[in-house]
Amino acid sequence: MKTTASYLRLIGIMVLAFFLMEFIVASGDDWAIIKYPVIWAVLGLVFLFAIAVEVISETLNSILFRGMNEEAQERYLAAEAHKKENNWFKKTYEKLLAKKPIEKEEDIVLDHNYDGIRELDNVLPPWWVYMFYATIIFAVVYLVRYHVFDGIDQEEEYEIAVAEARAQIEEYKKTAKDLIDVNTVELLTGEQDIAAGKTVFEANCVACHKVDGGGGIGPNLVDDYWILGGGIKNVFNTISEGGRAGKGMVAWKTDLKPSEMAQVASYVLSLHGTTPADPKDPEGDLWVDPNAPVEEVEVEQIDSTKIQVKIEDQPVTGDVVEE
Ligand code: HEC
Image (cartoon, rainbow, N blue to C red; front, side):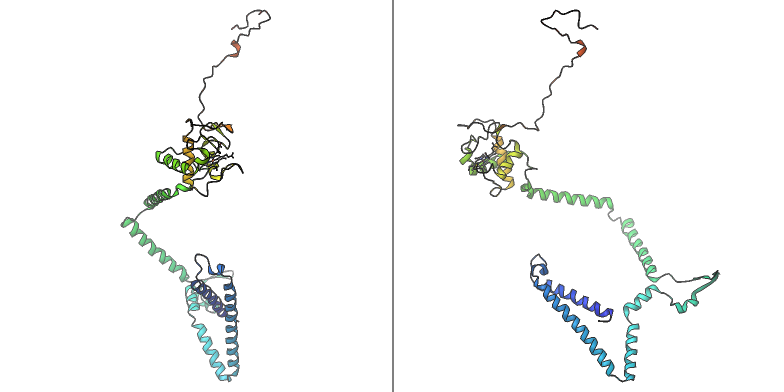
C-alpha cells in the first residue's frame, strides 16, 4: 500500500462491490444496504480482502526484486521508469499545461531586465486555449440555431412550460377531490354533491339523526343550535373527528373519504331550516356564521351642540340651544 495507484484500485473495487450489491440484491425502492445491514459486513470483508491482495502482491514484487541479480534489477527499474514516463494521464496533464521545466527557462526568458526581475515568454496554457476554441464553436452553433434558424427563445420556452404546468394542474384537480381537509373544505351546493351527501347520510347517519335530521340518539341537525359548532368547517370536523368522547358520534374519517365527508356535511347544512317530523329540542349554542355579511345600519349623525336637554323635575331656565 505504498502507491496512489493501490489506493485508487481499492476505492474502485469498493465502489464496484457496492453497486454490484445494489444490483444483485432485490430491495424494492430502498437501498439494499439500508434494508439488509448485513451487506455492510460483506463490504467490510471485501475491503479487507482487497487490502490483503494489494499487500501480498506488493510483498511478492519486492521479494522477487531482491531475488534478481543486479543486472536484472537495473533492467527492471528501467522498465518501470519507462512505464511511468509513458503514463497516459501524466502525459496528457503535462501537455495541457505546456509548462517549460525550470532547467529550460533560459530559452524563453525575454531580454528586458528590471533590477534583476525578468519575464518569461510562456505560451498560453493549452487547456485554456482549447476552452477558448470551444466557446467559439459554441457561439457559432448558438448563432445558427437561434438567430438563423429561429429556435425557441426564453419567452416561448416560458409559455410552453406554463401551458404544461396548467395541463398538469387540471389533471391533478381531477384526482385531488379527496385532498380537502378541515381547512380547505367549502360548502358544496351542486345538485350532484348534495344527492351524494344524501346517499351517505341515509346509509350511515339516519340511525341516530333520523332521515330528516330531526335527531334521536344524536342531536337535531336542522336547527340553529350546534354543540360542536355550525358552519361547514365545524360540521366537517365533527364528522371527520367525531363528537365528544362517549357521546356516540364516532370519527368517520376511517369509513368515509374526505370528499364524501364534505358532501354529507353539505347535505346536513342543506337541511337547515326544514321542519322535521319529530324534532329534538335544540342543544348547544346558537351558531352565528362569523363570515356572514354584516348588514349596513344607517347611523344618524347628531351634532352634540344642538341637543336639547330637558330636565323634567326642574324648570328649564333659558334656551339650551342657541346658535
Ligand atoms: C351512533 C349514533 C350516531 C351516528 C351513526 C351518527 N351520529 Fe352524528 N352525532 C351523534 C351524537 C350522539 C352526537 C352528539 C355528539 C356530542 O355531543 O359530542 C352527534 C353529533 C353530530 C354532529 C354535530 C351536531 C352538533 O350539534 O354539533 C353532526 C354534524 C353529526 N353528528 C353528523 C353526523 C353524520 C353526517 C353522520 C353520518 C356520517 C352521523 N352524525 C352519524 C350520534 C351519531
